[in-house]
Image (cartoon, rainbow, N blue to C red; front, side, top):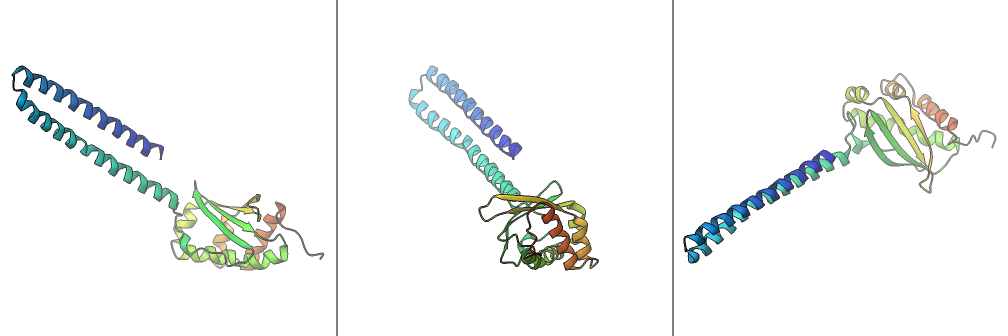
Length: 208
């Protein structure tokens, strides 16, 4: 983004310099006409000079185009495409786990969710929607590309006050095994829960 902005600034500076050069040339041309005594004609020449300047101002349109291009690039970055993953079809069908944000950078997929409970039994039931949600988004895109590009999944958990509770890392191989039918959904959920429990994000309600 900085490079894009830098290029835009450089273009603007170049455009301004070009206008100054044109103005210098117009001044020289007017001086010559004054020496020739054709002051009446100078008005016409002056108008022509302004036309030239207006023509040069066309550079502003080019700069505008470049700014628009920069905005398009920003939009692309904001969209934050995930390789081999259809983010529009990814959802977690749960009443207590709310998806807040998906972010991909440097081969890491960051999944940010809000937890409305810390009860292990309730989470175990609700997390059953996690792996199928991933699988749907991956199969709707390109599973091979996804597992080639994504090396780890960061699972960031927030509470109801939007405060970060913990962040745990999920083994990408678990998800690949699930997609390949080499791991059941129950096994996947248990591994995720164990990670969350070790990080202190889950209350063990087995005694209740």
